[in-house]
Length: 523
Image 1 (spheres, rainbow, N blue to C red):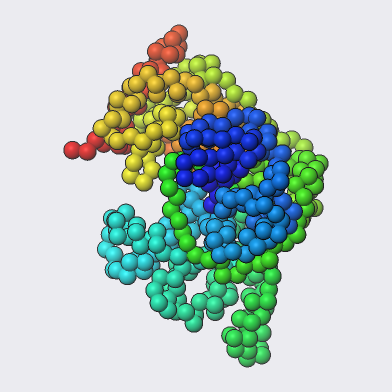
Image 2 (tube, rainbow, N blue to C red; image 1 turned 90 degrees about the vertical axis):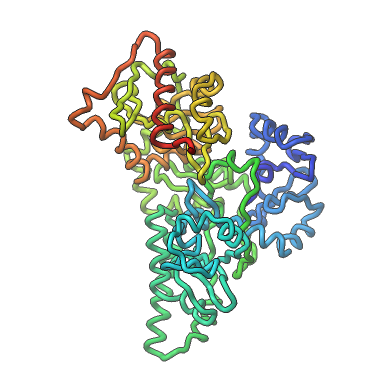
């Protein structure tokens, strides 16, 4: 996917960087990062839309130059742009945008989930990427040989929403269905009812947009019709393949990755190579001004990170095309939602209200029975130790989300006891817009869920997050402590008169519990 610099129209060279929007040079990545979070840069970025018919290729016209986000390069003329978007490197970079890691889950096309086993090539008891029988997959998938094979393996994309890879000469793995196929079986499989209906089921479970679901329904219905014709007319699969190749179902565009961009700023991304097998010509779309005017008229908010739109009434993310927005606002579901009075969506304001942590916490305590531990805030919110201190385990390493540093378990207590970490925790205001939630804003940049220990770059994304089943489950686990018979004997309430001292004590208790139970020090 485009890097954080490309998304901000910053051209990056070997050492130097340059912001095309603000005409500002930088000598380091740190200087560039400090620049792109400034308000004057964000204003320039919000005013700059994608260029005409090349919106799907993420081309922007900035003064007299054309800038490609996918390739992080400038082009002098529109004619050169037309040639550039057909080049192999651009096509490859564009295809990489179709898969990403969101909250530690592999997601294709912005919403189609791929299971971890399938991504790692674990089919039954075999690793098809490494061509090995695997008895302990947890150990195997983090091994050096497997990771190198995984990184080198090509990922390919079909329509609509299909992801597959070539794992050996003559064999393919369908990542959606997680099965192995011979070359002569691949096209037939992608057009069968089990595959298309599974794609539709995944899209519904993943809460994809209405447009994406309707597209997959159309594909499934088309597959049913083809299957019926094959049965009735005795057509062979070559005829069916020819028909299928003529279909022009468009893939959803403008979908957003919810992964926290800060975690990829200073690390190299894992490249998942593979050319798109079914490249469609660019579709002429409306200008940025038309999109903005239409969105404003219908109350759709713009996502600064990727240019997509968000409908608060329906809690849906929408592709950045006038056709998609028009279809959505004219849909029956949207009209019913927007005609509601006093509905839940009206209670979720676009701009969140926030107060300092010290002002939000009126009373604090903790529950500790040597097996379970939770911070009790205002006698109603139950937060785990790692969520309260914003310490998260990612791929067998610890990260402090508020200080933005990597940690080893041996240094965990030292870090949590430091004044730097304590001050950073206190600098994070608490969002008061949502009742019974503990959401803090880190460095005035992104929002942190105190139940799930995840961050979202936009408020709209946080509103989507709190509606998920994962969030409701994470919220229920510590809250259930209050229903235990031994709750009263194991809860300790701290002094109300000095919240600062009480919070300092809570931080020590969190560190003690995490070292004993969550992130033990290596012997």
